[in-house]
Amino acid sequence: MFLADCHTHSLCSPDSEAPMVEMARRGVELGLNTLCLTDHCDLMSIYGEPTPEYDWGTVLAQRRETLDAFGTRLDLPMGVELGSGFYYPEAAAKIIAQPGLDFIIGSAHNLSPQAGGRDFFLLDYSTVEDCYRALDDYFQSMLSLAAAGEFYDVVGHIIYPLRYMKGRYPTPPDIWRYRDQIHEILRRAVERGKGIEINTWKGQTLSAWRPVLKLYKDLGGEIITVGSDAHAPAPLALGIREAYQLMEDCGFRYVAVYHQRKPEMIKL
Image (tube, rainbow, N blue to C red; front, side):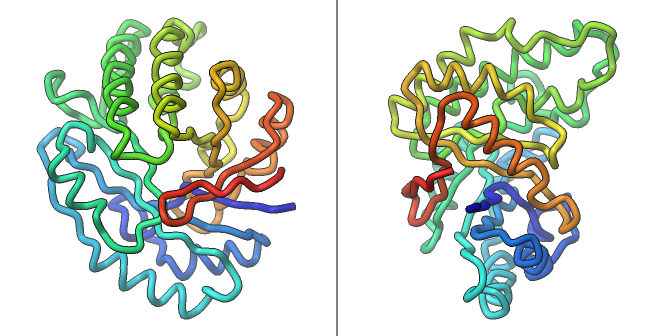
């Protein structure tokens, strides 16, 4: 079975301490064919301040070491997870002009600047109403992201804020309250020839993707990458096989990997 983990992080992300070479070592141990390191490039800090610079130097140094060690045993496209790029298009365009960039995940990890810009990880979810206020803002941001086609290859973890709300309430927030927005996000991606990802969140998030995949399929979507969002070697590739099965159940026959910003469709 072809296995690819296309959403992972190393010490080039502020929330990871894992050297790229150790992520690749684990990828080889697991029998991965493709491992894409997509370190965070968020153009807003966790508190909402603009952060328009990105240190490609550290990424490239880690990448050289990793390619030297494992480049003949593992396909290692160069990726980035670009957060809030649609809010700062000039800075985003400069960052993604980096030669050799293969893959961009477009994400929104923060509230909009108008709502204070704080990272969803930091928000208070004491009540379901708090959750819906956050989700209202999130899906407006995601609509803007999907419209800005030059700043992503796949739309990142569409259901992202739910990971911080999971298990808190007897009746959890209903993501399908936002069906119209999700439909429009997916439609815009399909219209621009872009894809989506199934983010397994280290194998913890799978069933919630089924209705998203069915809607994407109905809209004519075909391009899907799969990623564990692992920030350390141990959870690498968790949920990848299960995500493939879910894709097959929903009528998809191919998973995508990216090289030179173009999808390659690999039979499941």
